[in-house]
Image (cartoon, rainbow, N blue to C red; front, side, top):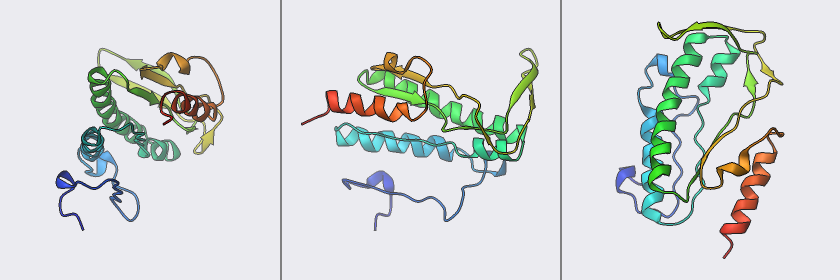
Length: 170
């Protein structure tokens, strides 16, 4: 058993943070998402081999199900910190591709109004379930141009696999 993840020299590592769900940001989760993402980048950086890393901010979805603006906003701000960390990594590692998306929209969220000067936003909800509303795909770094356009979200897999087959076959 590894006592400290920072000290591991394991080839592969799985870490399960909770038996159920982690607390939401508003419930005191702290910087867990940012810290665990930074650890993952450091872990893979030490390996010096290509890697695929998926980071999920699952409580954004929970906020949509419960129609909770405070949950959605706090979880999005938390995820935004992680994205900033990953963008900084991509800037230093130019062969890295960052893809940000969601598997679906939840809550039928719309933004009827907001005020940049006071940093406020009003969200309106039209469901408490997953919807068919399109979700954006943001890509940054190497081959990010391959992710432009409008397409079914399952196409992301095929686009990633095409890059893997083209650039990482031994």
